[in-house]
Image 1: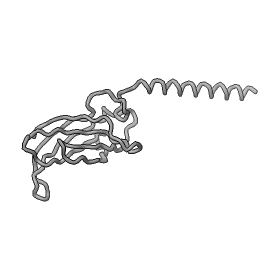
Image 2 (image 1 turned 45 degrees about the vertical axis):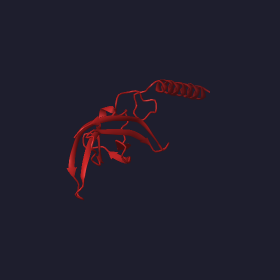
Image 3 (image 1 turned 180 degrees about the horizontal axis):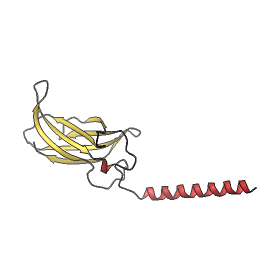
Image 4 (image 1 turned 180 degrees about the vertical axis):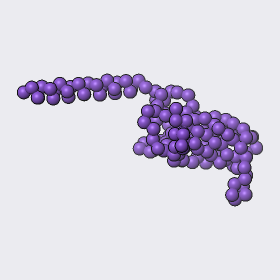
Length: 141
């Protein structure tokens, strides 16, 4: 009888503590993987420059980084990020962590006459086939 009482009390304790965690999670909006994210831009533009690729074509590369410090507690080994520059074709990248734990990524754009390149990136949620938390940062080479 005592064993059953201890088991029931332990079960109640565990279930109520889980419910408290769920209630607190509903109020959070700082995780870049949540649709309700309300924080600042989660990536940083590191560089934008013009170069000639292996096919002899001029391209404008924008390099960006999702720093480890912007990630929630459990850090995945890779993140899917959808990128686009200006109105050029969007690409889906599977970005892996580097030796610092950061997630570097880039987009190679076709040169445009405006010389302003607006880099847009969003987190791709594979389970929902959707892109969330898009931010745009404009830069020049």
